[in-house]
Length: 396
Image 1 (spheres, rainbow, N blue to C red):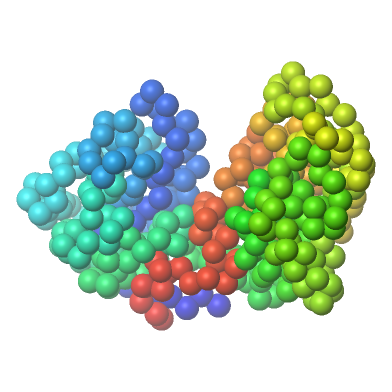
Image 2: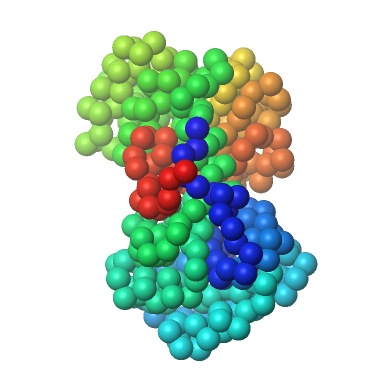
């Protein structure tokens, strides 16, 4: 059960409401190339505007050097947001928060929406500088966090402001937390976890948590080779984290204790290089020759993984099965995405940017139950860690 207050629990009419959103979207030549995160914030923004709040949006974008940089301006985002909302959104280009920007917020009309410039143009954002948090808080009467993707960060705009104003969550953040916590607390069985990506070190805490709940955990991608090495098998030139082999071995032992089967690839697509024109071979897991590296799961593994997904009633997928961006190594991820999309009897939850990118590439993004907007935050929540941006909000 979600225990934090949401925008529905407070009166917002006539109030200035500072909303932390996650508009960290890709921009090329001044054009937003993927508006998924902007669309995800629309329900909260529309609710507040329709209920006569004065809506002040704030977000970071990219990694500027704590100073204004036109390449990281949120102005292109403002144009897209105006179009999606169907109403003009004012862009506060000034960085004079306690002067020009403050005055502009005081002159807002009910239902008006404003977007501040990139929060990371201010050095006080990432350091949670109390003075910067105070300047942000002075712009509003109420604070709303709807940026699940940054909820694991202890920054001025995620925690500092929440300590100074009545603080509640938006619809996106509450939905993200509910979906992920319910998945772990009471999943319909069989519960199948799917983990991929490059490194075991990035997901060892997630693995540790999932083996306590999952019936089956399918492991692919580069991280599979550290597990394969833990079984004493040669991995050729595949990616292995030697310092994590012992941890991988412990996870295999823990899975047995919890009756969770960790399934590793039984065959692999291997090549000498990561390239679009690479010459590929299919080999068994124990037959990877020196000089070649595993870059995708093989067809036998793909069939085995698909079978597990087809019988699942809860699916959590985080990470691709191979270098899906390149055609020679896309098959494993593509077929897995297809299997997840076709299982319409299961609750399917997708976390992590690469998994989402794969769904979009293969056209299945509209065929799953829920796509998380926060890769790092979703992993932290799944592994059982506290999210500072969530903890700072007011309880019901």
